[in-house]
Length: 109
Length: 115
Image (tube, rainbow over all chains, first blue to last red; front, side, top):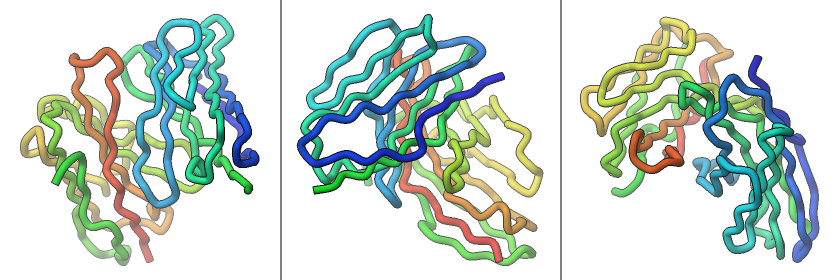
């Protein structure tokens, strides 16, 4: 079966670092995506990993280990505007996205 | 208008009504998608169109009927819905075969309430 797991909710402090984990089991693998979704808004693309390792993009980094079926999204220097849901999704052998339920990140001052 | 637009943003309908959701993408993409998003659940892929041809129908009930008249427009026709169909309906587009990442661009969604 296909399954993506990520924590339901996390809380962090403004200025700190937070790591959001995602584990997956999918039929075929053509990469892993992270999206950000603010309440009442559309999901927006953050990152794509298809090879093992860390991809850094400003304050956000995404890591992938294909052998472990594991990824994380690392957010540094947290800002209040980072309060949002973070969606992990893998692309299966049919090039369709399989989504996790999302992690709601709450940033406190 | 830029990106992906959806209308209406909010819709309340009775179980016997017929309504349609509209999606338009201004990105020149060749693939369009309908997703259902319910609270605390993963995004559920409903339909996929590539070059106006439906390539995916994930066991969606027949009370949902998609239409893709051209590569820029996508409709979701609704009839005799059930209360459990209340959700956020998201449209997305992508350029399949283009960028390796097949990144999908989402519209703001239609918040549907079935009474």
